[in-house]
Amino acid sequence: MALEKLYSVIKKRCFAEGNAYIITEGKHLIEALIYSEVIVNVKSRTLSHEQIIESLIANDIKEVNASPAEVKFDDIQPATIEKTFPAAAPFILSLDDAVAQRILSILRLLGYLAKSGPEGYAACDIVVEEMLKNYPSFSLESATIKKRIDDFSNEFLIAYPFHNGEELPSERRFVPGWIFSRIMIPDSLFKEIFLYFIFFGDLFQPVFKTIVKKETGFGAKVGVARMSRVIYSAACSANTVSIFKGAVKAGDLQINCHSEKKTGILMTQSDMDKLNIKDGDTVSLTFRTK
Image (cartoon, rainbow, N blue to C red; front, side, top):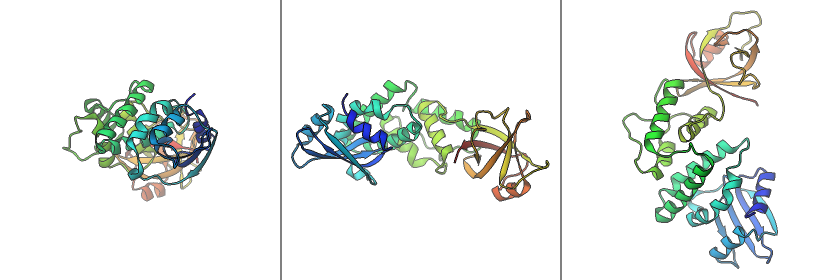
């Protein structure tokens, strides 16, 4: 299978970004730059760009070493993405714990490609085509994205997460760049869940909207929120809850799940004061295990 040896190393080492040094069967050295598991730049002292692509696609790979490094978008070769992404897509888009974050990074890459002229357009279109093969609900159509933004905002947010009055681009290639440059939700799991939802129409992790209630029971503990494992069973395997009031993150608390069938998140007055939350406020919750 094309690129199998390269992606075997990438997956085994959990290597998402940096330099891959590839030795071909003919003992040529290829240096590949990897961004979110996508091959974005290749070079060799002995092979032309076309020969490099042919070697990679033919899986003419004897040895691979990898070194993490920061990748700058200025180093990206759109033609390399266009030629290698179809062969790489089965590995890049495979389901694993990091697939949502990886795909969101690729969508940021699309924003760059859309500004890179005809070569960038071609690479962008190839990536989108492969996305659609694997995720039928994936969309960059402005009407679909706008509806999903409204649906998520109405369910989980108090404030619209973009500047009001600005219209989404009608050209789908420019939609990712518009989204990532204008979103006002701070970096967080909640932001990733929102972005994934508007592009794919699905939540890759649960989000709950609920009411804050003052904890007055015996055993109340500062820094710990109590929730019902009956109502929030999809989340109580986690140990930390992130609390959002609208698009603004209030903070994190540990979780202590109780067995009563009661909605709401219970927290001490001290925690409410610290998080600038009041008894009776509506909040949205995401969960994680540290």
